[in-house]
Image 1 (spheres, one colour):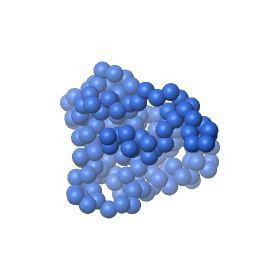
Image 2 (cartoon, helix red, strand yellow):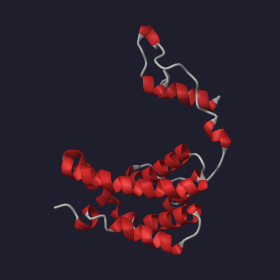
Image 3 (cartoon, helix red, strand yellow):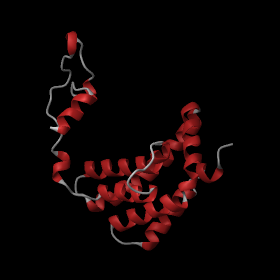
Image 4 (cartoon, one colour):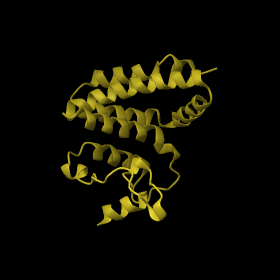
Length: 171
């Protein structure tokens, strides 16, 4: 069956209690939590991915995972909310950090300039940068623009393909 420590949500509160015990501001607690996850639980990421794969196939397992994800996101959203006044920014940063925790194991490309741990810490540090230019790339392009040969491009990209966005970002 489903691992009891995961389905009962035992591991998550253990990490949260450790992070809260150490204390400090949101940034300090997020860094401490990341250290725990990067070092102590890094070897368990394969289990996390296997459970998520199972959850995509079994709705009951998917519900357990969704509840646990919500609990994790709420906690990180709150910590980022101590750093950023805008709840949308706090949520986006929490989402990116959670994506880093869960997704870094599936990237097969080797690190070229630094170790895995150095790269993870650099990613985390980038979440704390309060760079207004980071938001300036958002484009004001009408939704549903027409593409080549009269085809309508996906509305989710504002009518731009990913290659268009990359080209604009370069200029």
